Length: 251
View 1 (cartoon, rainbow, N blue to C red):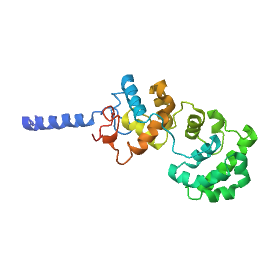
View 2: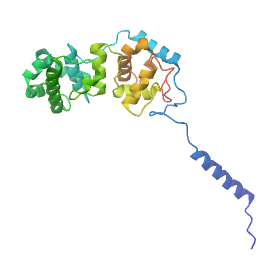
View 3: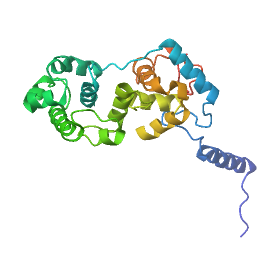
View 4: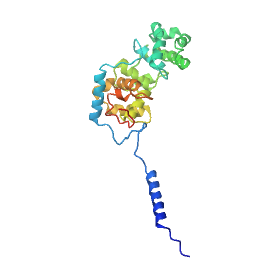
């Protein structure tokens, strides 16, 4: 039996549907974690321009955790995990007034440390870590904060981010500590795309010009904290908005 002919109009419709389906299934351009097109990486000239603007706007950036020496800085950064700098500062002002060395912290004891920082999240675990790291500083480093990432990361409660902060602020190393603000900023702007904090850190290390590496950590964190905020980024105040790769920027 001969096959029944299909009207041309129907054939055209079916063909159109097939083509449309094919277009819908076509792979979209690869995008970063926050939707930016990674096909348009920043040029070296753009990166230089961006950090030049950060430097002009804030020539001498500083961290916001209050401390009196390398040891109290280390403790403050350990306490700042999942907590705000303002909250940590409020708790540590009285603590550091009476315990600004590992020896004094050990003499104070875990219970009193716990009471001093009880307004900070995870304060019980953090008090244990402060006492434990103080013990190791005395036992292994004569009470001094070590100057290498490996030695710092061997201390209780100290990860790569904490070590990088201490190395940068206390010892002037050109390290970049990736917190939630900097992680978001790297991906959103397209400056340093990555699925992990380490990816983003290494990305920034590759692109940040040497003359800006000392302060890059602070510029980026402060920019992410106060301008390129998570929920409501203030693109109108952003000094690099014209260079930013974020497709949703509000300018």
